[in-house]
Amino acid sequence: LKNIIGLWLVQECRRAWAAQGNEYSYADLAEQAAAAEPYVSVLNPSEPRFLAPDDMPQRIADTCRETGQPIPGTPGAVVRCALESLSLLYARTLRESEKLVGWQANTVHIVGGGSRNELLNQLTADAANIRVVAGPAEATASGNILVQARAGGLIEGTLEDLRYRVVRTHSPRRYDPQASRIR
Image (tube, helix red, strand yellow):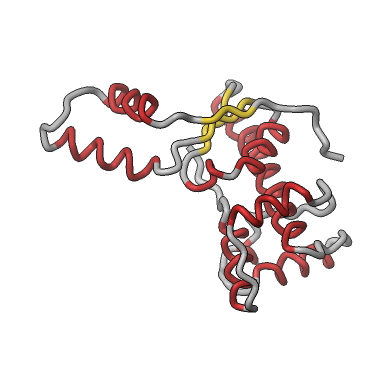
């Protein structure tokens, strides 16, 4: 289990654009990102410069400029850069984890808000060359409710039984790797 920065970059970009009077829904940004040219610029989302809030689009532009890459010129291109970079970080982290434990994974599970982002999930499957199972989006809340219900005697079962309840009631979406467009 490893928690990675996730959609923080996109959330902060959206907040910065809103402060400038440009309101974009996550669906709007996902659609624009899907239409943007792939793998123009990439960055390391785990760099400390990306951990604090405040004008994330400018931080992304500065990073691209400093590393000699094209600067994303539209919100869709910025989000695409963030999502592709995140998927590459997921793939690298997976390979590092596999080396640590001495076996190879056959599936990556993405839960929480990121599981709703179809482009991120497909990019992750492609970058890691592995099946991605996305969902549930409310994994933390579902797990919390079930554990409390079990502790309160409202339901019985093992941890595996509780997981099965989540799988039965939340339909995960599967993404298989497609031919890579990574240059």
